[in-house]
Image (cartoon, rainbow, N blue to C red; front, side):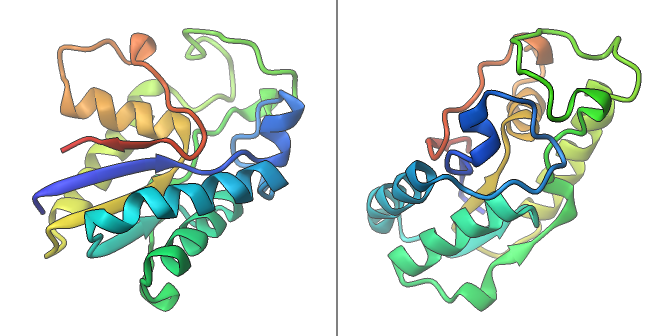
Length: 170
């Protein structure tokens, strides 16, 4: 793999409601569908060889829209549980507040577990024989991947991703 591009899924219904969605399988909002179609236009010149996606509906639907837009076979999207969103436990469905450290909340996936999952996910992606990989996933796991690639960063201070934003990580 020479290049890894990351895209957080398009805007979901729960994103639009301003609540923690985590492991809730919320669908994309209309705006999210449009964001993904626009992202596909931006991705087309990058000649993506492989698309990897979280199995969660909002990410996988985003990946499918991208695939159609760039002429990539939808049935060749690689789906991996390693890239599901962080479990927010009792906060799922609650009003979202920008909290820098959720690690002290019982039932929320600890950032260290998320970072371990990001390491395993990166190892998986690096094992793929491809020059240009697109990973379609979620904000928290994306931040954990950024942290793994930049060990000097504190996970709690890693900048997040906008919906359908394409970021070159490697």
